[in-house]
Amino acid sequence: SQELEQSPQSLIVQEGKNLTINCTSSKTLYGLYWYKQKYGEGLIFLMMLQKGGEEKSHEKITAKLDEKKQQSSLHITASQPSHAGIYLCGAADPNAGGTSYGKLTFGQGTILTVHP
Amino acid sequence: SAVISQKPSRDICQRGTSLTIQCQVDSQVTMMFWYRQQPGQSLTLIATANQGSEATYESGFVIDKFPISRPNLTFSTLTVSNMSPEDSSIYLCSVQRGSQETQYFGPGTRLLVL
Image (cartoon, rainbow over all chains, first blue to last red; front, side):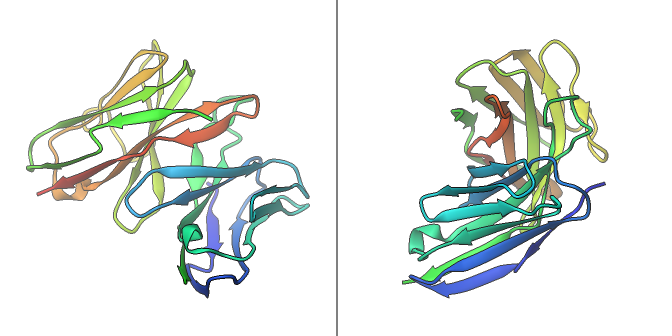
């Protein structure tokens, strides 16, 4: 089965600093999702990456998938207290549901704290 | 994006009782997924709910404990039966949407079993 390892497990930064969260897979990634979760709440979809070398940005958050499709990174530029939360990467199971992406396997999450 | 609502948002229950969680989506979807997030843990898929057929359960989850209904393409329920404190978790429903089949999650139901 596919396993995802996130690093670091937790991160404390000062407001305005840049930061990077990594997600490494034990197998080739066919769909890699990034989510943000506030404590005790649901998941907010950030971005999905599918192609090797793909990079997507939204506001101050950029996500990349490496060429080998086994590692993804999430980079936040000029962090703000609103960026605080738990960041989760999730990988689609290519064997679930034929051509559609099915169930997701998640990493353990990265807890981000941003001090004002 | 998808608009997903869940009821209840949270509940405190006594052991041995059952709770049914509802998930409503703003438009029709083929598959709906139920996940569990135990305290301090990441998400684990419980089952996939398809309209018109029985749900497909992941290893470690059984229908007697987590019966699922999917009466139409916008609604599903998950029941947590004969609850114990170990069932205290956040339960989330999820759907796929769009040409790239992006996966979206509901706001979750926080369950505490005493």
